[in-house]
Length: 172
Ligand SMILES: [Zn+2]
Image: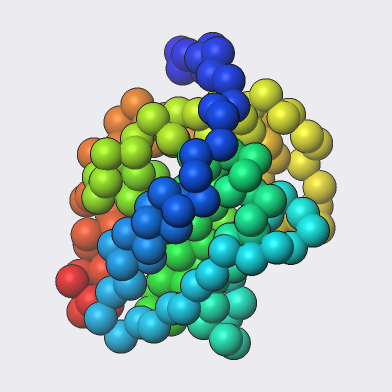
């Protein structure tokens, strides 16, 4: 049984400058040959992050960075997952949102030493426990939390699956 009982408080805001460095590293880690991504931290009026496919542009809302630097790192890596799927035309099956979550786990636990961000994010979604809406491309919060916690507990298979996926497409 998966333990999803971590009691993890939202940390106090880090300086925006540190988040800027963290996000720059995430974007660099996940920009593979054949990709181009510009990004910014911008005021959005909401706690969010999003990738604009046509502009190949990632926006991490300043409100999100101020709310939680670790959730902002997760979100930046997740949105870079969307950029990878779109720009590399990756042959994913299933939900793109879950593929993007896997990329976030890959970045946080394998490419960097921010794996605790993944545990915190898993707990965050599990605790939100919003209902699953048919029109929402994301899995339910609780399902998402459990999936992220499983990836936190054993991220090694990500190296195999994503290594193969990027290998198949000639990226890696
Ligand atoms: Zn997404």
